[in-house]
Length: 266
Ligand code: SF4
Ligand code: SF4
Image (cartoon, rainbow, N blue to C red; front, side, top):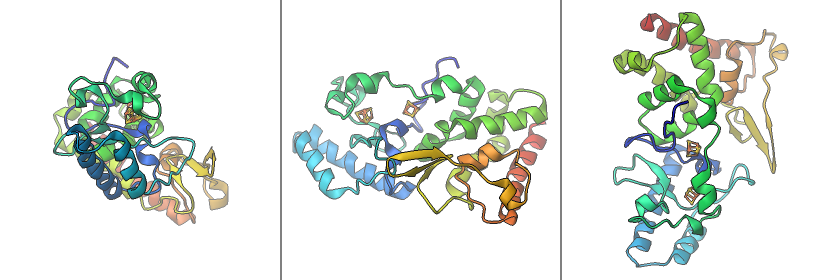
């Protein structure tokens, strides 16, 4: 991928996934928004000299539900909103947030680790994939979930590109609200998927038990079905199918989005 800044691509969204943002047990949009809003207000008090950083941490320790899905990954208490309209979530210790002062050294990972970290999406996503995700999503919560789920992005691209016989062109998407809306419907399945596994903590295809994690598998034979061409997408959506009927309904949802996208793109 040519260099595209996936973390802060533009003024209308951002990602803070590797700072542990979604790793809280309470990680719904509403819960995270409330958490970040409070922190942002509290950090303003630090900047204005009304409380110290130590007090900031103490207050959050008492106030926040710090339970994490995967305990090995730290969830940093310095993720907040970077703009007054709450469109970008990110590091409140970053120099751009503090008149050039880089405060990241006081964070759990330290400045060097924070500054030098680039998640696998930087190397795995190719230009048109990254560009289209950025052009379609204007929403920090959804953007962070999607841009870090490489399978979820790549599998959709592969299926529609194979069917169309060409690579998706970001310019084509930019010029079409209809195409962008269909893409957005696909991305939003991350929040609205009716077959989401309710039985255990999940991030996409991963599930967690205490300090351990593993990749889930869908047992198609037990459902009396053949393996699905949408398998990677189902796993990214943390699916759990009780019956073949569930699987059929899930397939119909994806068929509908993919058929409509390909028809309109042509
Ligand atoms: S998960 Fe990747 S895109 Fe998101 S903030 Fe971290 S490095 Fe940036
Ligand atoms: S200090 Fe590091 S981990 Fe914490 S919010 Fe900033 S970049 Fe993320």
